[in-house]
Image (tube, rainbow, N blue to C red; front, side, top):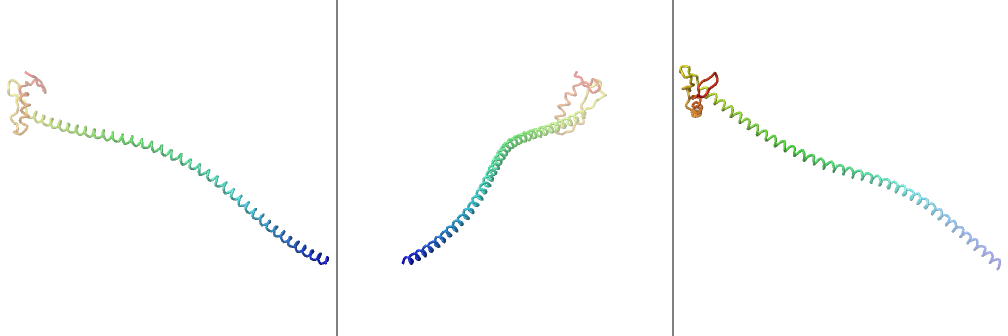
Length: 179
């Protein structure tokens, strides 16, 4: 019986040893798998760190670009303010030029009107002077109005000029002297 027991004990020991060996093999396989997964996880973490580092660099570039855009916007706002001020000055100058031009046009119109009136007066004066002639037949050398006045609206105007001239004595060529 002892031998039988030893044999059974040996069988159970062999069986337990095989089972322990299988368990050790399973643990080794699972440990190897865990090591492989840890290595894969480590690689993924390293890739994540690299991606995060790139993202940090990209964010720094974005911040720098945003600051540059902010500076440009500030410069544009300053330029727009200056341009608005310049535009207002130009508008004011244009208004002044328009006012001066209008005043100049009005002055030119007034000058043209005065020139026309002066021309009319000169023509009227020429016509009035044309009504007079020197009469050499009289002894007192007086200037007499001609008898060729027309009967129109200028007769009264001509009469106003002829009366004082008829009272003048001819003194020198082209000059009249009061008596």
